[in-house]
Length: 402
Image (cartoon, rainbow, N blue to C red; front, side, top):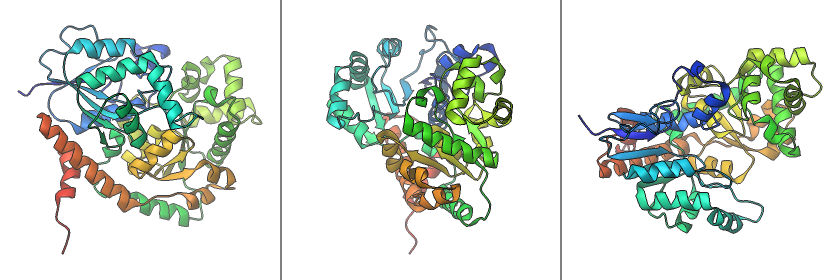
């Protein structure tokens, strides 16, 4: 039997989420259900026995958690960011004394001072510096989400990284997923009816005082309400989760008022909460999330992983590039994207669709290269990859038709 891989985090779902209260569930999800998508991707792309270490799986304190494991796989997100407390995480990785395979590492998006100012702030943050030091000393392989993340890694002495975007982009098993999504976008543009779409929603309390983002979310929510699509929340604390998870009655009146004032201040309470009860979603399983996204014609919003869940299901997930981080990711992975300004200037979803940028063949070509690179790098480490990844990577190795 081959050596097991120890994965940090969930396998892409929380087993029996009812055993947690809401704060505990959010802790198991890393405060954001979007983490499920790249954790699920990592588990699907690598082969062999797997152990998952985290709040919902094998406890960090279990002495058998790492027994026999040659590598610790770290499905990463925007880990190089200001204000995060990585004490326990860094402690565990140091004590593991095993080489790390870091997938999809991202860096804080530039502040108003530009890239240099952001980098200097990150270097001055002791939590970021310590985590980066652990990665620098222990990583056998690091992939990052884009060019800026690569630059930040270099500043911390983390060299020889691969720019491979987010692993969740490789979840769709169709080697020609981009071409298929491009055809769906064209069909939606040509249809006289508003497509059935979903909103991958911003956390309401986070945008309550941000005028531009609040205005964007209200516009998207109004179009959603008119069509009756799905409102998908990923984070924002227990109140936001309950509001989207069909248990809004448990939310205190003040918090309910704030959520409604952010999304649809003119609506009556009964009307607003009836819609949320029917169309709100908060997922604790990546496979279930992807399955429901496959029933939509379109996904739209500022949250990356809500759109990646749609793309994994073959539904165009259109990223609204509202900051440099989402812009970097959309550009790196050739995702369907539209600028925030274009959405605010549009009078309908149809006008938004007309402004979406997406090159299906470019997306497919990028995925082939990425899958092949990842497969090659894993082979060099003696790590097996799944038939899923081999299929995507094998398309890149096929000779061009004469």
